[in-house]
Length: 113
Image (cartoon, rainbow, N blue to C red):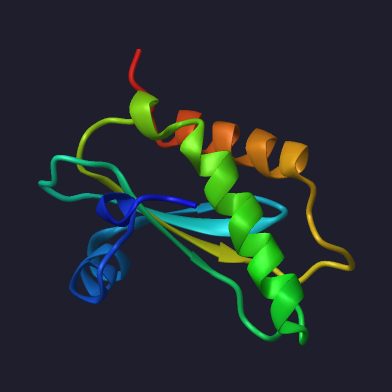
């Protein structure tokens, strides 16, 4: 799981949705905004349309957060990202999430060199 300092608060959630840019992936939609923070912050949204079962939704969230943990130190400070999962037939694997996140972060130019 992510530490609390790397999670988006409710107040920041609205700022990211208003000022953020949208990036699409087959597994999810990412909304990325650059807000003056010292840390990169994230949030994951998994609706009931993705899975009716609460344990499955939480499994998806845990996989997303563990895939994000790999990139936290490599991202520019102030990067705020909301990941909205898309409905699919099965729970996405860690490797598929990791590949999609890497592609999105490169596309948004938020990875530090």
